[in-house]
Length: 90
Image (cartoon, rainbow, N blue to C red):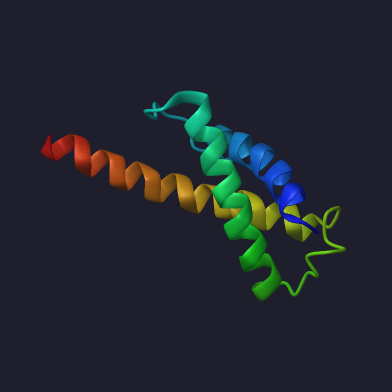
């Protein structure tokens, strides 16, 4: 599966991660989409390592989508920690 497919999965994974972790985040929808894409790429890497999903054949595999959502949640948590600290010190 190519980078375009991971971006597509990441966009949806970002929306799902945002729905799982609601809250006010600075940046709006563009940052949420970027977090989703980064999370999808992270999830794709983790899915390949953990589940052994071939990245070419794994687009419709459930583990691919689960790992993309988990990756997006991880990126969202890190983003909230980083932006929360920077606003607290400012």
